[in-house]
Image (cartoon, one colour):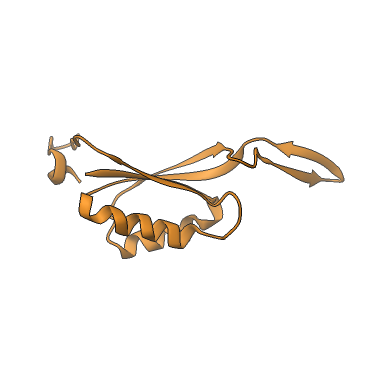
Length: 112
């Protein structure tokens, strides 16, 4: 099993959700997060005054999938979340040792 984690721009969330549904993702955890990358935030102008925004709002999506489905999930996220501009986000994949469904006690593949 793999944990696919993606951090994307908020306005790309609906496109990404639809793309994940097309590759068969039935469950995920989504969080609103803030952070910055190489650009260290950005500058905005509000009512004529310029100010720095250090933490940029993002959406974090976490999905546990079988090993054979990980590439399709990653490709769906990348294709749907890309704008070609700085700050599009990141996707990373890590191995999962075990999963337990709390309600039933199902383990590993049965818990996904």
